[in-house]
Image (cartoon, rainbow, N blue to C red; front, side, top):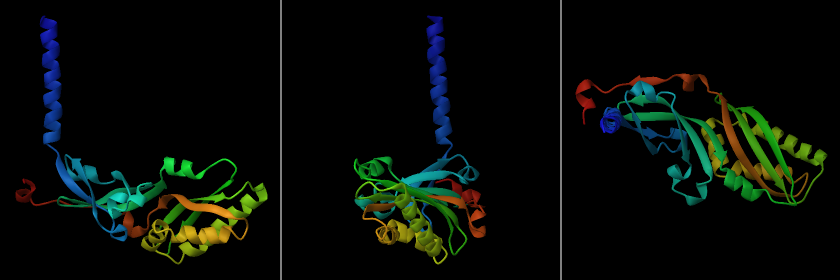
Length: 221
């Protein structure tokens, strides 16, 4: 009986401790970067603002646009600035959901995947994964030619676009349409998608993290 009471008391102590931890946290509103609409995208808890810096959030692009067709697009944002109760982010990556990609790849077709490293006009180093789906099986040499066409077009485009313009063309499908047009000169295409974007290096201005705390009298709500 005594052992049971001791176990119950220990569980209650743990529950109270966890409650105290959550009670000590503040909630911050996280915003997308200006080049991704700048909308509020999440509420993020932290015991102190320093612990928010560098934290990565993964959201659906739907959270920004409220367009249901954007549900398969997952965007990663990294908090790099805190100002009072507001947390501001920078773009860290983009990826199509696995379910959506599986829906594109069917029997009787060929898939060509190109991994292309580019640098934008404003200094972002990115790795783009481009997936081309042909309307029928193709030879290895044609797959190689399709990948080279993707790489050549992206290298040319990236140096003329800043990060905002590149993401805009990616998310609106403009860039995929240009890649489709380039690839279909080699073989009839069924679909071309930019399946993933990974940030390899941030430009100088994006590397700096900033922290501005509220005055003590404004912290309590």
